[in-house]
Length: 299
Image (cartoon, rainbow, N blue to C red; front, side):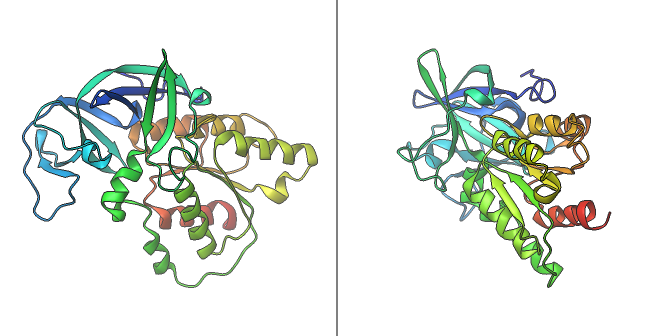
């Protein structure tokens, strides 16, 4: 598969790979994908989660195979189809699917956020829905799928315990994160680390609207001294938000930290080119606190 990761810098576009399970269409951000390979036999792991088919080692890299049908309660897969091999949160995972349809280039602004008639927000494993040629493609939340199987792959909040007691401070921090669960975990973790002056938003557009409003009122320094942003978000993604902040003379000096499961070598170069002051993978909540300390307390 040949695709430029997240296209050009800060365009607010993404590429979604459409695949099928039992004839239904689902999607995954191309930026998460390493390769697509035919199904191959796996070695079962004793006492593993029911959704884990087993492990295999193509090219000497151990990969965990996950039965996506089992995760979605759509039955169990047969030894046919394809593996979508992914890398995010520093994990190599293959998701077993029936077929791959192709890649679609879309804007984050065109992705529909599922409402509560689909599922409760915290329980949802869908990050968005794309309507394409009278067909609905459900973009799955692969981070949540994996963390539901093994919670240790999520935010490592235990890292904060190693920091001991910390003094409260009033440095204002703006957070852009569309996952309700992760948003809450980040807020709770920062509060535990002493940061209590927090504004949290669901996407880059909401965060940028707050920044613009503070600029008009002349209160930017009072409300936004650091921005933490995810990359994948509906309406406006984190790369677009970073580009807007760093290309505006009024906001370019505000530290921006990209905190995302997508941070790898290629994505790190992209974030650097946009002016991000720091980039961390989502499990590293302890390192996030240390980086914020450096950016806002140790100037």
